[in-house]
Length: 417
Image (cartoon, rainbow, N blue to C red; front, side, top):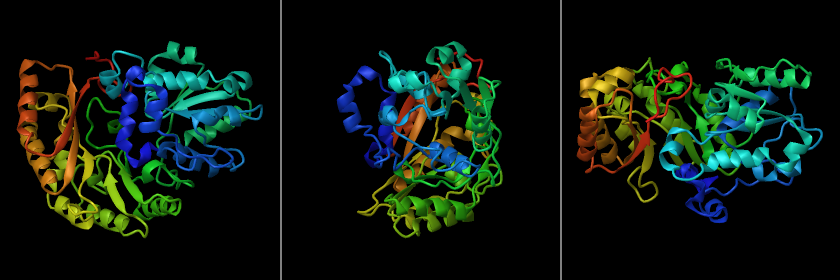
């Protein structure tokens, strides 16, 4: 549960030899607590969505248990038919891990191997399915999948496809595909979570309309979830002791937007209603975009006002906003939608003006730079350096990442940096 600081999650991208396990897990990644039956009290949001979908499609609470890997030997038995695993980075080759895990073994890859080699998993041999944001890796590398003993990889959204797949397995179907592409979920398919999430995270939008060539969320249609569903999930988290709220979105400022046009009234209403939920003390969001910030600059001071930013109780919050490059040429080539409704030539100014606006309203920009985008040349690198240097006067965190081609994106066949 990262002791309430989800930024600690990025520490798992450092090599395993960065520090001893006993110290690493104590400081950065302590296990989320469990009850007497080993059910996790707080779990990752994606896992909670799969749990909710199973319970809404004929499975009972006695059929499904969400556990921490530390407890797997205490829970798996001859009655366990399916082991579902969610992983951000099963092979340790995601963009952040690729950048920061060398030299040394990636911790997430090691942790997955450790889980799958557990004596209870070996003894009882449940059907093993792996999904989550990093599932593309085991689709791209089938030999690694076989070596790990993963029977099936679930790509994409799971609310519709996972319950069907689990029923097939339990019915003894022997023709399960090794890679399953999940159906896109409608609003009706996305069920409310029934148990609380790590750090009080709840989803407000899914997918992205900016269509960047390197990014998986951009291939999924953007949907905004109803405010009443969002509030119900926040109340459930609050009732389980989570006073913090993290709004999950690829761009929270595009909540109920028309394509990439900010719906300022809807965004302000979202923050007002979320912060007004009894028991909520802190509200932040995962992602926003500089283009959205500058498309509706009046929204940022309103968010700061609603959340009372700059005071003793809430001095600041953080949004993740991708810079990626300072080159208008590369913006036009790979991510023209990222800067919409502005032009690629305006991108450096959009970033500078956006970061200044956020910084002046006590919202810290946590931004990434992608090194080695296909077609990057010396002039592009210099433009990026110039842009980053011009941002020094604003409060921010800027993180360089190596370009990593992801399966299903338009750049999937490109070369790694």
